[in-house]
Image 1 (tube, rainbow, N blue to C red):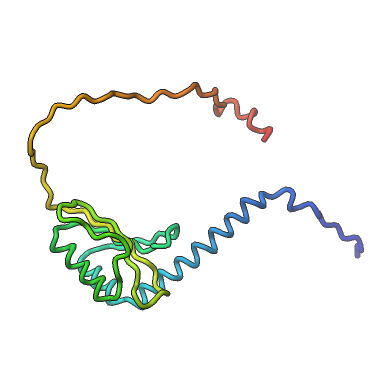
Image 2: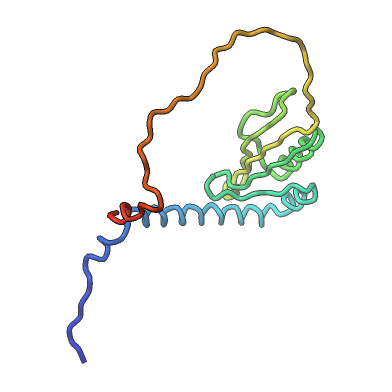
Length: 166
């Protein structure tokens, strides 16, 4: 039996430690957000069943604190129906309501009494809009173009040996 034990004490020096730590922080953050979304969907199941019956598909975004997204389109009656569902389920709009002639609306809804619930990001686009000419105007307007500085020549796949130094 060999009594010599050898360990590479510098093994961390060969790893991208900061990148791995950032990845672990993101994983933990996403896990907390997704657990909050799961709790919200389970506990407020009647709301989500009603949204599904309206053929509204929710989305989950682990990069946002308002991680449950409710995007939908329709007319004013459909917006009012979803608005009423959210209010009856205990959510309250945390931003400004849409104005009368708005064609889109985005807003965060927070639950009024249960802070364990995730915020909801509701985005609505009207499908009952039409473009109407209301007059004409003549406007002098500056014209711009984008001009960029010179970029360096980057290595191609044929010059991959130049990248091996990294």
